[in-house]
Image (cartoon, rainbow, N blue to C red; front, side, top):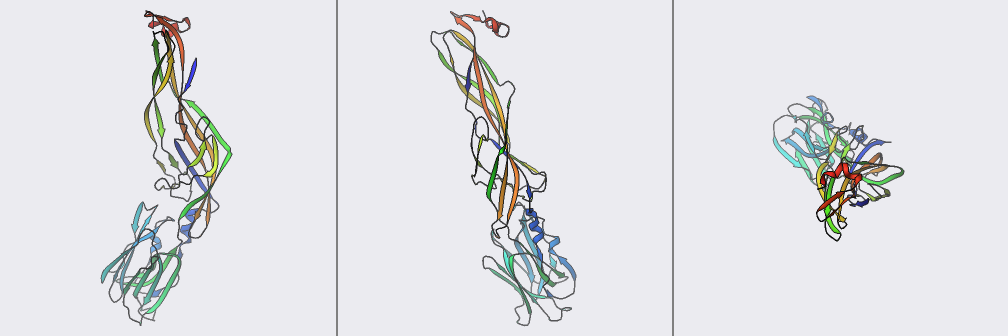
Length: 378
């Protein structure tokens, strides 16, 4: 019996990353939102708080603000993107419908870093918000309302970003204070792969291909055997517990292979992060596909012989644990994530066996194969 190896698909075909965060959970950043006790305005109207409207995601960011204004501030409304910019929402319009409406929109990396609010009266019971000004990280200033010097100013210079307002509202905005939130931009800075945790397994598929080849010539003949099998590609990411990271982080690792998948694993990161769209905790996001694949394998058939060529697809899976360090580039705070790489790969192996001879058109199947292939004999 002769063996052949098609040397197929040694590379990692799919990667599954399952992870949970220890130490500090990244979603704790949501709890870092600060509700400022400083404000301008009076006690009229009803209370409002955009914290009740904010999405419970650490990557929530302001995309647009609408202000209705004339001599005073009639209403305010904030718009946000969140969940890796895959979803959008807004607050209600707080205040009335008077005045003219103005809107400013922030660019992708722009945020509100400073806000000024002016009250109309030093008497807190009767005062309202007479003017409001927003300054963005790009240096743009959006100023609405009365520019009278008699207004009482309060300015907030945020060390992070202004993400919403709180206060009181009715037919106008009676009072306004600010809500700030940390700036967040997560990057993978290191991956430590635990080589001692590596495990591997191999499973042969069901019967893949078998062909009987006849050579009734006086010289060896080279031919090709077609082998069809199903190959899975892509990856699946599943978070079953609170991981804190809603953005899927796919990571490439350098590998050299013996049989399947990971084999010997380099501990160096090959720095490819955030390969897939956003993910909600408990959800599974998959790009896996199954493809019918056909390859051809060279087989040599000796003179005046009959061979049967068999091929089987072997599926290998490999697992290795890792520890990943994620850094918020705005403040240098690090979060540690533990998880497991699960890889799958495919190779096709086969054999061919001489089962008889053929001369002058006469087929003679050897006794050992008579039961299975004897029907070929004349």
